[in-house]
Length: 304
Image (cartoon, rainbow, N blue to C red; front, side, top):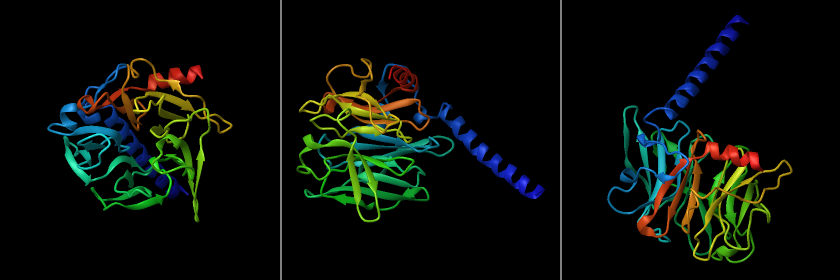
């Protein structure tokens, strides 16, 4: 019994040490690529690092749980995947290395809950929507393989802790290319088929609803909403209710929604402190931005 107790104490000590080290890194000067964190006013994230020569740093980004890997998309143009690539920065214990090309032709990175898989958008055909997956192989990633391929939309695929994924999709209604029929949806994968279910009219609109971020515990959803025909929009937040419904989106405020612009690729860092998103009125001023988010989230939760 004493041996078992000692083994338990040692195991818990190892776990506690790992968690503490992870928390310490998030609070260190090297976190977030060594960039000075913003306050309540958004600012461009690492512009001299992410796109130092040509191209646009944009779309959804992703940090590993320990904060020592950062993934993002570099593209040459909006609405054109030619020349795009998934890129990364890696912290080696002393400094950040990058930008490194991880997977040419892929974008919209989303890490699995255990960090061992990377879900991506990439090559597709006009009749199907495809979610790709790459598996961690040491310090590299495997060649992507098809994870889901359907004749309806699978836009911005994101998993959650309980196994339910979220996507922008038109289910089995309308044309795959008719983005005005897309809704924010929950996706449940079974042994035989997948079940697509719209999140309902409180969070969805008659227009395009596809750009979003879902919290790992499904407690809130950050959405690009008030979409215009040219996809200029604002960012809002919807909260998951105990009965399973979603609240109408609450605007994230004038500091984030500062005039007409395209806003997409919302993502919250694993420590919950910062919101990242892409903003631009054109290709020329398109960048990944970040802003302090945990304080804003607390205020918005108190209002609901």
